[in-house]
Image (cartoon, rainbow, N blue to C red):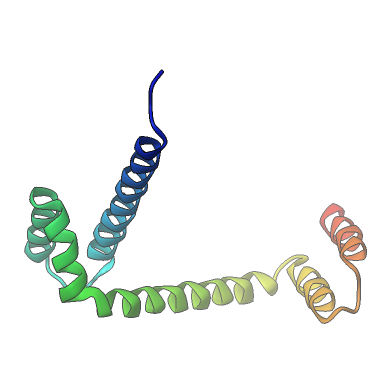
Length: 127
């Protein structure tokens, strides 16, 4: 088995670059399908460009639409957070959800320890 250390290093670099490119590819394709401002043909064109000319397609997409990627991700995160808050508000009105919310708030403020929180949560859920 004759595989010099430099070859091991270069193989590691190539694997790292391949994984990095795959991450960028999935990020770009995810951003394409998340964007509501683009039509179907535009999305198909970008997908075709990214698949046919992978490296050039990814880099052109990042240059052309990179700023909007962050904005769309931030908007999606805010919407997800608001949806979660709305869900909690709706479910808090029924059942033991209000008790659990109070327990979480007590734990977050440091009024009770994690062990006390777990015990109280188990009691509420068992009831």
